[in-house]
Image (cartoon, rainbow, N blue to C red; front, side):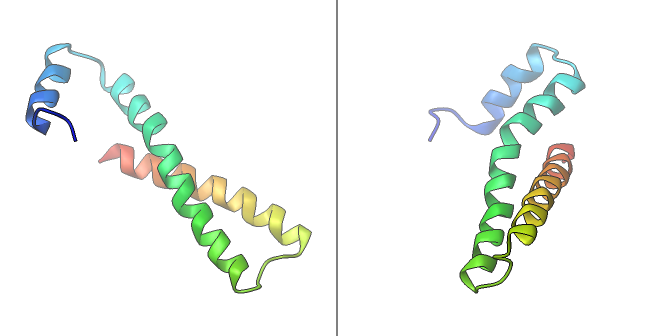
Length: 79
């Protein structure tokens, strides 16, 4: 959807000599919403099957989704 190729934009980023920590943090900020949406979608599919609808289970799966999202984000950003 962008007018130039990936290599063009990668060259621009490389020419600015940003630190690896800044690039990693940016990838995490961009990637977390996608990973959260994926993990929470699996949670909702589980609810559609009628499982995990008790309030204690809802809270537990909510925290699990946050943890899994953070883990998947770190893995994806490290690539």
